[in-house]
Each structure stands twice: as structure tokens, then as C-alpha cells.
Amino acid sequence: MDIKDFKNLIEKYILEYFDAKPEDLKNYLEPMLYSMKVGGKRIRPILLLLTYNLYKEKYEEALPFALSMEMIHTYSLIHDDLPSMDDDDLRRGMPTNHKKFGEARAILAGDGLLNESMIIMFNQCMSLEERKVKASKLIAEAAGAEGMILGQIIDIESEDKQVSEEMLLKMHKNKTGQLIKASILSGAILGEATEKELETLSDYGEKIGLAFQVKDDILDVIGDEKAAGKSLSDKDNLKSNFITMYGLEKCKEYCEKLTNECIELLRQLDKNVDLLIELTEFLLKRNY
Amino acid sequence: MDIKDFKNLIEKYILEYFDAKPEDLKNYLEPMLYSMKVGGKRIRPILLLLTYNLYKEKYEEALPFALSMEMIHTYSLIHDDLPSMDDDDLRRGMPTNHKKFGEARAILAGDGLLNESMIIMFNQCMSLEERKVKASKLIAEAAGAEGMILGQIIDIESEDKQVSEEMLLKMHKNKTGQLIKASILSGAILGEATEKELETLSDYGEKIGLAFQVKDDILDVIGDEKAAGKSLSDKDNLKSNFITMYGLEKCKEYCEKLTNECIELLRQLDKNVDLLIELTEFLLKRNY
Image (cartoon, rainbow over all chains, first blue to last red; front, top):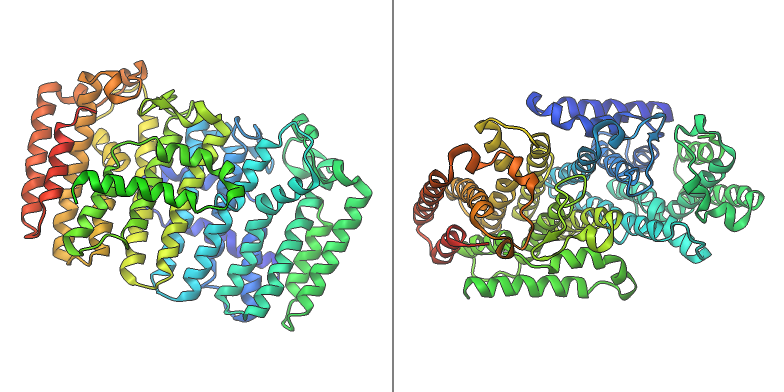
């Protein structure tokens, strides 16, 4: 299997999951499914499956966790796009959830996805396997008010402000970094990686999360709207980001340096890390 | 211990929980704590603890679940009060979360509380005790898109509309009923009630949830704003409710009938149900 196969696998699993819901509920669940289907790179669930696959051969038992992760990511985008937050009309080239279904339904679609992700994980915990409870707890913590949501709060408070380098790093480390790192670590926990390996993967997770965000900021400057599938708003231009902080050239160098460090860390694992290296390099080279 | 002691216990536990958070995060968590502190009747966590206490003597191991339940209830109120939802300025006599902290922070406070409630339960699941995972799963399902959130979606879709009796019941059964029933059942599962007892408590849960909602509708008509601590908006008057459906007198009779049926069900359990009966009667007689 290559990376594209994993992406297809996840997208098929998303559709199957919602398809298995009772017919009389499907209309109510449509806003949730809409944003889950809109697409995206599926980086988090792919990272989870690839890391799991370093240790175990199949992927079936990791799939529900990968789905949970993508649901959490998707809910955060729906709420982030709301008028009182980033006020975005387009996401991945399509109307944002609230543009399509109205604000109230969009808020509830986000709530519903967050809640559903937890139901999926509690269902997995019913087997009473410690690694599954540990992975679930780690994912929930990464998503919470001391993880991703903290990053979102800092982001809101930083609006129209020049913020310190420290605060910018703290914001991104939480807002984007936490879920990316949790995808990697939960995959590894499910695969029964050793403590030592988890440490290495934790470093990898931090660096790839940071590289991902620096690259996003680079794309916001040099990418065009079409490739990004979202409107590059004036609001974004007022915000502090890595480009306003370090300048474009430094950012490109930094991103490359982080990517190399990621690859070095992966090689330390003494496992077949080819696909993870490929994904790491793709994230550096991507133009969307 | 009487009911007031349980209420105090929960309120103390809420404060302790947030007080134990890292100092540098407290400012970010303030909107979450604000709504948790505003008060209310604490019906759900009290129900959970009282039901647990039918079977086990202490309450310490049920407290985290009671807290989770109150967090889920509180997040749902924060999101319900938002301008795009019910657009309420007051809740329990205090400014609603978005009036106090702005919409963006309020949305994130709600997200944070829902997420935190799940973290608390995953932490409990780390003991790998089946009853704890079962209780957590039941609570998450009751809160989700096929439970409380479904009720909220139906509520939104029913706005400014005359709805059928069937739809009104479906809305309330989910919007209010699910969390109330889940409080009772999760307490009983933690207490290791038998399947037969769970069935009886499930019936009790459905009936008390319905009685609670009918009483709420009665209070919306005859209660004054001061006692309710919220503004009785014009918007509410356009909505179908039990009063517009059956008339005030029928509703009072119905509420009393349900309460009596609840008490009968409790007596079938052959346990010390005094406090649960007291709470059930209080919910009928309350004027807020």
C-alpha cells in the first residue's frame, strides 16, 4: 500500500461509517458528513495508520482511531470557520459548513463530530485493552482545553495584534501541533511501541507539526487561492505568523531543516519508515 | 446526607477540579469555569450520585462521572444560548457566556467543556473496569448526535413552526431526556445494578425527563423571569411546546401523573429510594 491507498481507505471508511447510521437520522447527520466528505489531505489519520504500521501489519484495529482523529480535526475546522471566529466562506474550495447549513446547524455539526469521535473511542475501550484506553485518552487530551482548544483561544486573543515569538510558537504547538503529535503517538501506542520509541516519535511529532505550520504560512504568502481552496483574507494579513516573524527565506530554510530532522528521527527507529519519510517530504513540498 | 449536601459536594468538586489546573492556564479556562460556577439545580449529577448510592455506600468513584455529566449539560447551555441558536442574554440570572466573553470564546468554552468531560471519563477508564467504560460510553452516546444533539437539531428545525405531537416528544426525549436518563443509568451501572433494575431505572429516567420538560414549559408560562433567572423571550412564545399542545391544566395533571409513576417505579427497586423520591417530588413542585 502507498500513501494514496491509505487516503482512499480512510475516505471509504468515513462513508461506510455514516452509511451504517439509521436511515431516519441521515438527514440530521448530513452537515456532519458534508464536512467529513469535503476532503483535505487526511494527514492526521494517515500518520496514525502509518505509525501503527511500523509495529503491526494490518490496520483494521487502528482505523476507528484514525476516523476519530479526522472527526476532531473536521469539527475544529467547522467551528474555526464560523463568523465569530475566522469568518471563512470557503474551505477546500467548497462553501464552509455554516455557509451551507447556517450557523446553528454548523455549531451542532461540530459538537456532533467531537462527540462522535469520543463515542467511537469508548466503543474501542470496551475491549478493556490498556493500549486502546491510553490512545483514546491521549487523543482526547490533545484535542482539549489544554491542547488544540488552548491554541484556538490563543489564536483568537492574538487577533490584530503583534505577538511575541514565544506566544506564536505556543499557539501553533497547540492549535496544529497537538493533534498531529497525538496522531503519531496514538498510532504507536496502539502498535505497542516501546517508551524509547515513543520518545523519538514524540520529537518527530513536534517537529513535523511545526514544519507543517511554517509551510502553511509560506503557502499563505506565495500560494494562490485556487490551490489553497480557501480565501486568503485581509484578516490573515494582520496576524502575526512565521513569515512576519522571520521573513520568507528564513521560513523556507527552517521548514527544510525541520523536515531533515524529522527524517533523521524516523531513521533512528530501525523500522520500515519509507512511507513516513515520503509523507514527511510531501508535507514540505506540497503547494496546498 | 440530604440532597442539599450532594449539591454542595458537586459544587465543591467543580471548584477543586478547576483549581487544580496549572496556574498559567487558568486565565484561558475562565470562560469554562464561569458557566460551571453560575449554578443551577445540578439535577443530573445529583441523580447520578443518588442512583449510584442505591447500590454502593460512598460516592467518591462516581463523582468524576457526575462532574462529566454537569460539564456536558453546561456546554450544551453555552452553545444553546448563542446568538445563532436561542440568542439568550441571561442564564440563571447572570450574563450568558457569550455576553460575558464574546461569541468566539463562548463557542470554545463549550467545546472545551465537552472535551474535558470526555478526558475525565477516559481517565476513569484507565482502571480497565468494564462498568466504568460502559458508563462512559452510555454518557457519550446520550450526549451525541443520536441523543441530546439530535434533540437540539430538531429544536432548531422546529423554530417558528407548529410541530406534531410526535416531533415535540422526540425533540424533548432527546434534548433534555437523554442526559437525565443517562445520569440515572450511568450511576446504576457504576453501582453494578442488575439488568432488571436497569430496565426499571430506564423507565424512571424516561418519565422523570418528560415530567421535567413539561414542568419547564409550565414554568415558562406561569413563572416570572426573576424566578427563572432567564428572559422569557418572544421567540419562545412562537414555539410549539407542551402548553400549546395540551393546554396548561392538562399539563399540570400530566406532570403530576408522571411524577407518581416515577415514585412507583422507584419503590419497585426495593432499595432505600427516599432521596430519589424527594428529588422527584422537588422537580414537580419547583418554581424555577
